[in-house]
Image 1 (tube, rainbow, N blue to C red):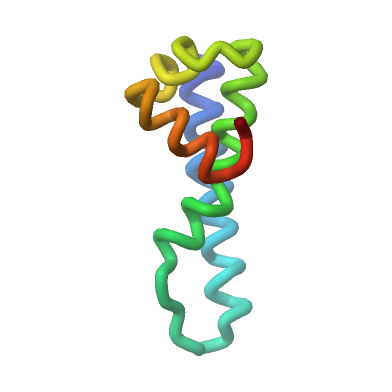
Image 2 (cartoon, one colour):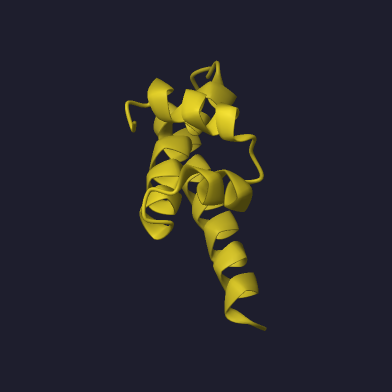
Length: 82
Protein backbone atom coordinates (compact mmCIF):
# COMPACT_ATOMS: atom_id res chain seq x y z
CA UNK A 1 0.00 0.00 0.00
CA UNK A 2 1.45 3.39 -0.95
CA UNK A 3 1.94 6.20 1.54
CA UNK A 4 -0.95 8.33 0.20
CA UNK A 5 -3.41 5.47 0.74
CA UNK A 6 -1.96 4.84 4.20
CA UNK A 7 -2.37 8.54 5.07
CA UNK A 8 -5.97 8.49 3.88
CA UNK A 9 -6.72 5.44 6.00
CA UNK A 10 -4.94 7.02 8.97
CA UNK A 11 -6.97 10.21 8.58
CA UNK A 12 -10.20 8.24 8.27
CA UNK A 13 -9.26 6.23 11.37
CA UNK A 14 -8.39 9.39 13.30
CA UNK A 15 -11.76 10.97 12.52
CA UNK A 16 -13.64 7.80 13.44
CA UNK A 17 -11.68 7.50 16.68
CA UNK A 18 -12.28 11.16 17.60
CA UNK A 19 -16.00 10.82 16.95
CA UNK A 20 -16.16 7.66 19.05
CA UNK A 21 -14.50 9.53 21.95
CA UNK A 22 -16.91 12.43 21.46
CA UNK A 23 -19.93 10.11 21.66
CA UNK A 24 -18.49 8.40 24.75
CA UNK A 25 -18.05 11.81 26.39
CA UNK A 26 -21.69 12.65 25.63
CA UNK A 27 -22.62 9.79 27.95
CA UNK A 28 -26.03 9.28 26.35
CA UNK A 29 -26.88 12.95 25.86
CA UNK A 30 -28.16 14.10 22.49
CA UNK A 31 -25.86 15.93 20.10
CA UNK A 32 -26.85 18.54 17.55
CA UNK A 33 -25.11 20.26 14.66
CA UNK A 34 -22.37 17.61 14.48
CA UNK A 35 -21.50 18.43 10.88
CA UNK A 36 -20.91 22.09 11.74
CA UNK A 37 -18.95 21.13 14.85
CA UNK A 38 -16.65 18.79 12.92
CA UNK A 39 -16.15 21.19 10.01
CA UNK A 40 -15.31 24.06 12.36
CA UNK A 41 -12.68 21.86 14.01
CA UNK A 42 -11.23 20.25 10.88
CA UNK A 43 -11.46 22.89 8.16
CA UNK A 44 -9.22 25.62 9.66
CA UNK A 45 -6.17 23.39 10.22
CA UNK A 46 -6.72 21.79 6.80
CA UNK A 47 -6.76 25.18 5.10
CA UNK A 48 -3.76 26.40 7.10
CA UNK A 49 -1.74 23.27 6.35
CA UNK A 50 -2.37 23.42 2.60
CA UNK A 51 -1.70 27.17 2.52
CA UNK A 52 1.59 26.52 4.31
CA UNK A 53 2.44 23.68 1.90
CA UNK A 54 1.82 25.96 -1.10
CA UNK A 55 3.68 28.87 0.50
CA UNK A 56 0.47 30.92 0.72
CA UNK A 57 -0.34 30.46 -2.99
CA UNK A 58 -4.13 30.69 -3.01
CA UNK A 59 -4.54 29.50 -6.60
CA UNK A 60 -2.51 26.38 -5.94
CA UNK A 61 -4.23 25.81 -2.59
CA UNK A 62 -7.67 26.10 -4.19
CA UNK A 63 -6.63 23.65 -6.91
CA UNK A 64 -5.26 21.14 -4.40
CA UNK A 65 -8.46 21.33 -2.34
CA UNK A 66 -10.74 21.22 -5.37
CA UNK A 67 -12.25 24.59 -4.49
CA UNK A 68 -12.95 27.73 -6.47
CA UNK A 69 -10.43 30.42 -5.49
CA UNK A 70 -13.26 32.72 -4.38
CA UNK A 71 -14.62 29.98 -2.12
CA UNK A 72 -11.16 29.46 -0.66
CA UNK A 73 -10.80 33.19 0.08
CA UNK A 74 -14.22 33.21 1.76
CA UNK A 75 -13.23 30.27 3.96
CA UNK A 76 -9.84 31.80 4.79
CA UNK A 77 -11.59 35.00 5.90
CA UNK A 78 -14.22 33.03 7.83
CA UNK A 79 -11.49 31.39 9.92
CA UNK A 80 -9.29 34.52 10.12
CA UNK A 81 -6.57 32.85 8.08
CA UNK A 82 -6.21 35.67 5.58
